[in-house]
Image (cartoon, rainbow, N blue to C red; front, side, top):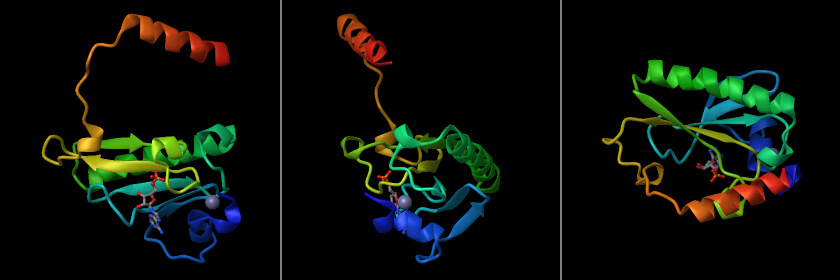
Length: 140
Ligand code: AMP
Ligand code: ZN
């Protein structure tokens, strides 16, 4: 999706309203309108990038510095014992809005019952782990 047809670019431009948490020169943080848990915040770069792969180092650092700041405010302000930082890249990962964003999801497990953030660790197959490792390293 290009920036011309991007809901988050429209929010940055003030064409679409949002519940703003924080902004600085490079980043904007606002409440997610479909919160996975109460207090769910999104942090975005003001510049349009589709996903992690395209981000410049400066905007990558800026988004994660803002995420760190807001995560601390979620823990303190909402008196939550934890916050999950989630970030999806590509339709295969179920990214829906194609403007890079970080989800900050307040967590208080197991009470919150957010099943997507729970998984049972199962030992992997060593051959498969090594084969994926090789393919990832070959692509570096
Ligand atoms: P993702 O699946 O990572 O692309 O998630 C996109 C997120 O953006 C979802 O959690 C949506 O609820 C959220 N979202 C979409 N449109 C808006 C909007 N106008 N204001 C706030 N959050 C939005
Ligand atoms: Zn955009």
